[in-house]
Length: 585
Image (cartoon, rainbow, N blue to C red; front, side):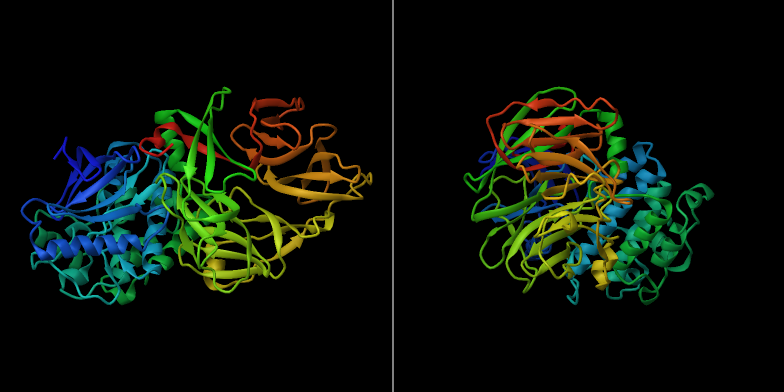
């Protein structure tokens, strides 16, 4: 099919072929961006069962909006073809990555955590994947693992539909109950996840055989080989996790994806591993082979057309940058935006119909926001996405709420409205301001975990006591608190009684404050660039973007971008240039 055009998709090259589908890379000529398109294989396109299966795949994937799950764009049915269109992910499969590259154990474990997060999200929405394996995970060029191929997926409680009348799945990853002809449930996916974890760490699946039947016999009757001592030493607890995933009967296993993810997070916590949807460790590896890291700066022009954003890409070692618009249709009165850690998704508060909170995939041009319902929490004011990409902090007139993107659960953290929400780099703490915005209104909330939001645990908040020894902050208003210096201190903008702005730093443990900038600089929006140990900020009176390094005594302010724009939002995160292939900007 290469070289042909189907509707407005130009077919470019074959990406993969399986028994139930053929996937091509294509270019959307309307939006000038790349897509992945899955067709029913030749010879099967007339079979009603094959069309039903593709429809079921599209329906399952359409219910899932998660940073570690490939995004479905649309389902198309023409006179000649039935196909689904998905985001194009430029990167190797997890299978290729673990077999052909020298990843560290920590890097492999970070990818495992991302896959587990995707499985937990699918189960929370009542979807079984039923074909979890490394070949169905693609690792994008910016280090994000994305689960694909929901061709065997089904809703919980549905009966299995088989095109051929035989058992479906890949033998090495199939649970014993499937070989026994029993019904699949969430624990069936957990078995496959356990096999994936083992293979990702070791390099090959634990059960081997020369035929389908031989592999099935091994799975039903034999125990899996143990991990090596080196892996056990680096990841204490992972052997126990695999053993609980690979128990022969589903009612004795870890019950579902959420429980599996929770255990893996405990392993990560015990070993000091941090991760997010954009795996820090996997990204470090990809940086070593690509070494084209940029800092991505996102700005929105204040008080202009609410559906158009300006994206600026700024090279870390130069003043070169480029801009691109992001079009957000079907929305009015935009009030707040927040980017996730990959820079590929945007949470926003605006008038979206029934719900005021929505999420946009910014790689997909002109796609309306997907609404998110928090329930009866009152009028929303502000949204902030956690660095782990799995929690949203949302402020409303009735308080501060945390929304779990994996389970769709919501808990209230504070019963009073807050403003200027900011997360620590590890996603465990929030700093914000009460409406009074005085010294006593600076709050630190946490520690926070996904388990807290899943189990409605109490999350503590306490004011940060500022020790203003010289009385310089007697009358002031605070704005834009931001964690800096590895989360050990908090920078904030202060408006003095004399109406001049200063940039201050408070060390959250002891409350001691230190002045960073004062005088005529008038800083306004601020954010921390951890890669270069510098504060980036805008000014009230002067357009552009400025920096001040905090890694030495010479705090020389310099201009990064000279621009006529005045910005309403500033966000900084790592961006890999090669990851932008096929996106709209």
